[in-house]
Length: 212
Image (cartoon, rainbow, N blue to C red; front, side, top):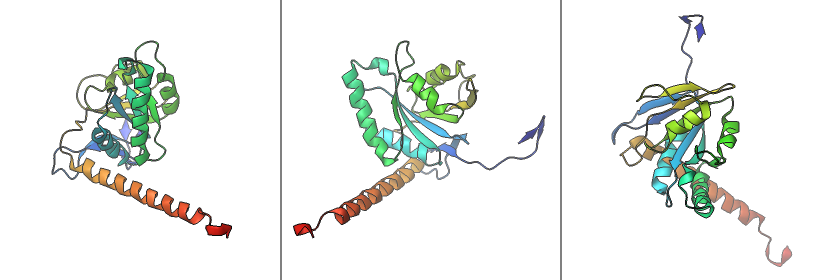
């Protein structure tokens, strides 16, 4: 909290995005704080690696911000059917975090999806999270009209009309990450609990034999 040039106090973090720095790292490295949304960006490929997506989604949701799964670089898809197939796979993976939006887009001219994302993040602080080369920085530039300054570390870039985007360093989903494994096990346990609860509800609503 600032008053002119003076720092009055540092407020507690509301959300945080971390990544692990090794198999034994129990604290992790903070990539972004106080983000309302976390865009988990995956570059288009004909066959996703579910384990990578699940790990990134687990890290994104661990800090209490709302995750959004984004399939980027759709201009690489050979046709609409291929793009829809990969988006359907992402939608299945997103079921581990109920309510997670799934968007497909490209920053290349003539592709849809970018405007829908602009509407979703308007006025919010949004962290852009994903593996190296997935198109994070290009997406930040397309959303803000400004290229993030410098290399390495995280960069906060204002959004036109309010809000901001945080371009974070690439997160290697193949590297051993104790934090990711911990949060992923929690997501899977919560998903199993929801399945069990839904199964019990269906059994309770099933009509008794003979219409009694």
